[in-house]
Image (cartoon, rainbow, N blue to C red; front, side):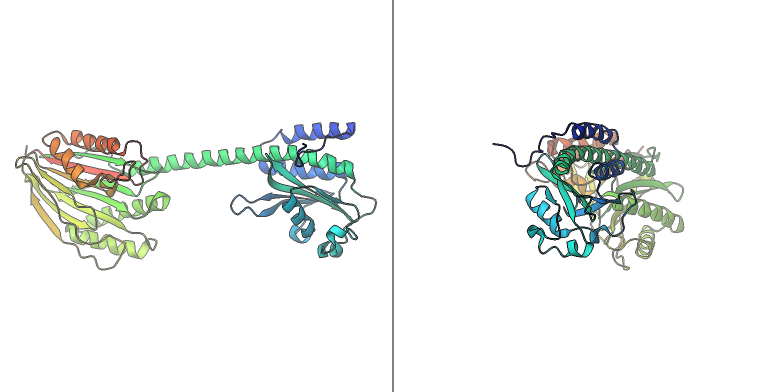
Length: 425
């Protein structure tokens, strides 16, 4: 049984030679716009049409849209949607079959075609563009002159040509997608490199403390960040934060929040005042609807740590010498949410080998293939198991434990942590 969608064989030797020539020309370019224009120009040339239109299905909504509309002089036609017979286009879309009429004014199939009467169209040929039996668009040509009637030979040639054109258009489309994907990947890689450049390049040197940090983005760019900087000459400020959104918007918000925090640190020594100032500036300048949770700690000489929580995960304190652990208070609310920021500082005194772990929820909420979260208990278990080891070892063990727990399940959130171990030396 023959395939009703298959193109009929081109019987005219001249038409066969023409088809071979234009197929070679079509495949000579991967520029989609060039291919579309070549298709339309050659269609008008081989059919002797007064006007030609090429439509493709829009990738987003599947609707047909005009890509090329030209006259016999190769000039673009304005408002193509008002220049064609919508009746014929609908029939071709519904049947996926070519439609030819050499007497459009009196063709019974087109009795309700008002545009045919208004435009004075006489001969019309419309052919679907099929790729693997899927309609991707159509080619439409018409004539108003009696001398320019289309015949079965034109239909035969145009159906065969449309199949070749469909392949050329699809190849150009795929190439365009690949080029765009490559460009976006390159830009995202550059964005990630820039974002990594905003993170501290070297571990801080603070007598009595051993510090390590990790930053892993779930996507090309992240909303998490950490930072540390000198405070009052002999202390170290440590910040860990998590922006509410993901992707590029979160990355931009992250860069803004980081800069504002650094600026506020220069303006005030008090950690609560620093976060309140940052919050007010974010509310004035940042995009509505986004916020950032922050934990800000100041590591003082002698093991004293002063921390302020603005809606962030509770840091874990493991007291190795006592064999106990506790989570520091949650408190406050995220920055960029409300003008009022009810935060208060909490101080703890560390003993030698005590460990503080600051982290984002990408650690505790990391899920395995069964949808189970890593959780706080596993976090405590890993840290207690390697308490007394260097901070770099604790950090590496935590990251490895999360990876093992996920067992290949893709991360859905960024993971950032800072490990601060008090050596007492």
